[in-house]
Amino acid sequence: MKPAWLWSLPVLAAAGWASFAPIQRASREHVFEIPKGTYARRMAGDKVEILPSKITLTLGLDDVLLLRNLDDVPQVFGPTIMMPGQSFRLPFDRVSENQFTCTAHASGQMTVLVEAEPVWPWQKLRWRLRQWLEK
Image (cartoon, rainbow, N blue to C red):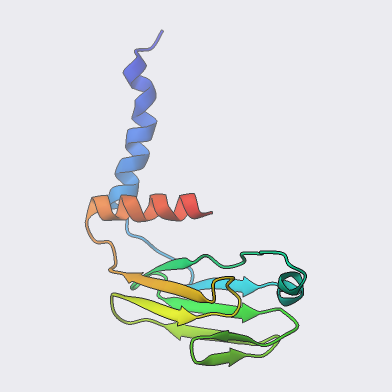
Protein backbone atom coordinates (compact mmCIF):
# COMPACT_ATOMS: atom_id res chain seq x y z
CA MET A 1 0.00 0.00 0.00
CA LYS A 2 1.30 3.46 -0.92
CA PRO A 3 1.71 6.21 1.69
CA ALA A 4 -1.13 8.77 1.79
CA TRP A 5 1.16 11.65 0.81
CA LEU A 6 1.82 10.03 -2.58
CA TRP A 7 -1.76 10.79 -3.61
CA SER A 8 -1.07 14.51 -3.21
CA LEU A 9 1.86 14.51 -5.68
CA PRO A 10 -0.31 14.90 -8.82
CA VAL A 11 -2.16 17.85 -7.23
CA LEU A 12 1.11 19.50 -6.22
CA ALA A 13 2.57 18.92 -9.69
CA ALA A 14 -0.51 20.49 -11.35
CA ALA A 15 -0.38 23.47 -8.99
CA GLY A 16 3.32 23.91 -9.71
CA TRP A 17 2.75 23.86 -13.45
CA ALA A 18 -0.20 26.30 -13.15
CA SER A 19 1.95 28.66 -11.11
CA PHE A 20 4.95 28.85 -13.43
CA ALA A 21 3.76 28.06 -16.97
CA PRO A 22 3.12 31.07 -19.24
CA ILE A 23 -0.53 31.90 -19.80
CA GLN A 24 -1.56 31.73 -23.44
CA ARG A 25 -4.97 32.41 -24.91
CA ALA A 26 -6.31 31.87 -28.40
CA SER A 27 -8.07 35.25 -28.33
CA ARG A 28 -8.00 38.35 -26.15
CA GLU A 29 -11.77 38.73 -26.48
CA HIS A 30 -14.08 37.92 -23.58
CA VAL A 31 -17.39 37.19 -25.31
CA PHE A 32 -20.90 37.69 -23.93
CA GLU A 33 -24.07 37.16 -25.94
CA ILE A 34 -27.50 38.66 -25.39
CA PRO A 35 -29.79 35.77 -26.41
CA LYS A 36 -32.75 36.08 -28.72
CA GLY A 37 -35.95 36.69 -26.77
CA THR A 38 -34.32 38.39 -23.77
CA TYR A 39 -36.44 41.54 -24.06
CA ALA A 40 -39.65 39.54 -24.55
CA ARG A 41 -38.91 37.43 -21.47
CA ARG A 42 -38.32 40.55 -19.39
CA MET A 43 -41.55 42.14 -20.61
CA ALA A 44 -43.37 38.92 -19.64
CA GLY A 45 -42.10 39.37 -16.06
CA ASP A 46 -39.18 36.93 -16.12
CA LYS A 47 -36.26 38.35 -14.12
CA VAL A 48 -33.75 36.78 -16.48
CA GLU A 49 -30.07 37.54 -15.75
CA ILE A 50 -28.09 36.96 -18.93
CA LEU A 51 -24.99 38.95 -18.08
CA PRO A 52 -23.10 39.01 -14.81
CA SER A 53 -23.29 42.23 -12.79
CA LYS A 54 -19.48 42.32 -12.78
CA ILE A 55 -17.13 41.20 -15.54
CA THR A 56 -13.43 40.80 -14.78
CA LEU A 57 -10.93 41.20 -17.62
CA THR A 58 -7.14 40.84 -17.50
CA LEU A 59 -4.72 43.10 -19.38
CA GLY A 60 -2.73 41.25 -22.02
CA LEU A 61 -4.90 38.12 -21.79
CA ASP A 62 -8.60 38.86 -22.17
CA ASP A 63 -8.78 42.64 -22.27
CA VAL A 64 -11.35 43.08 -25.04
CA LEU A 65 -15.03 42.89 -24.12
CA LEU A 66 -17.13 41.60 -27.03
CA LEU A 67 -20.91 41.89 -26.72
CA ARG A 68 -23.18 40.28 -29.31
CA ASN A 69 -26.82 41.29 -29.52
CA LEU A 70 -28.73 38.23 -30.71
CA ASP A 71 -32.03 39.66 -29.41
CA ASP A 72 -34.83 41.09 -31.57
CA VAL A 73 -34.56 44.60 -30.12
CA PRO A 74 -31.74 47.15 -29.80
CA GLN A 75 -29.65 47.02 -26.61
CA VAL A 76 -27.69 49.85 -25.00
CA PHE A 77 -24.24 49.37 -23.49
CA GLY A 78 -22.66 52.56 -22.25
CA PRO A 79 -23.02 55.18 -25.00
CA THR A 80 -23.49 52.55 -27.70
CA ILE A 81 -26.72 51.24 -29.20
CA MET A 82 -26.37 47.71 -30.58
CA MET A 83 -29.00 46.87 -33.14
CA PRO A 84 -30.23 43.26 -33.44
CA GLY A 85 -27.43 41.13 -34.86
CA GLN A 86 -24.70 43.68 -34.13
CA SER A 87 -21.60 43.21 -32.01
CA PHE A 88 -19.63 45.73 -29.99
CA ARG A 89 -15.90 45.40 -29.18
CA LEU A 90 -14.50 47.44 -26.32
CA PRO A 91 -10.73 47.10 -25.72
CA PHE A 92 -9.17 48.14 -22.41
CA ASP A 93 -5.57 49.29 -22.05
CA ARG A 94 -5.21 50.02 -18.32
CA VAL A 95 -6.17 48.64 -14.95
CA SER A 96 -9.53 50.19 -14.05
CA GLU A 97 -13.04 49.75 -12.71
CA ASN A 98 -15.72 50.93 -15.14
CA GLN A 99 -19.47 51.40 -14.70
CA PHE A 100 -21.70 51.10 -17.76
CA THR A 101 -25.40 51.48 -18.45
CA CYS A 102 -26.62 48.16 -19.84
CA THR A 103 -30.21 47.51 -20.93
CA ALA A 104 -29.53 43.77 -21.20
CA HIS A 105 -28.97 43.71 -17.44
CA ALA A 106 -31.94 43.61 -15.06
CA SER A 107 -30.39 46.32 -12.86
CA GLY A 108 -29.51 48.47 -15.88
CA GLN A 109 -25.87 48.65 -14.77
CA MET A 110 -22.74 46.57 -15.28
CA THR A 111 -19.25 46.86 -13.83
CA VAL A 112 -16.19 45.94 -15.90
CA LEU A 113 -13.12 45.40 -13.73
CA VAL A 114 -9.79 45.31 -15.57
CA GLU A 115 -6.96 43.69 -13.62
CA ALA A 116 -3.22 43.64 -14.21
CA GLU A 117 -1.67 40.70 -16.04
CA PRO A 118 -0.56 38.00 -13.57
CA VAL A 119 3.22 37.79 -13.48
CA TRP A 120 4.03 36.10 -10.16
CA PRO A 121 3.41 32.34 -9.70
CA TRP A 122 0.65 32.74 -7.12
CA GLN A 123 -1.08 35.31 -9.37
CA LYS A 124 -1.00 32.91 -12.32
CA LEU A 125 -2.38 30.11 -10.16
CA ARG A 126 -5.19 32.35 -8.85
CA TRP A 127 -6.02 33.54 -12.41
CA ARG A 128 -6.18 29.97 -13.73
CA LEU A 129 -8.35 28.85 -10.81
CA ARG A 130 -10.76 31.74 -11.40
CA GLN A 131 -10.99 30.92 -15.11
CA TRP A 132 -11.67 27.27 -14.30
CA LEU A 133 -14.35 28.12 -11.70
CA GLU A 134 -16.13 30.54 -14.05
CA LYS A 135 -16.73 27.84 -16.65
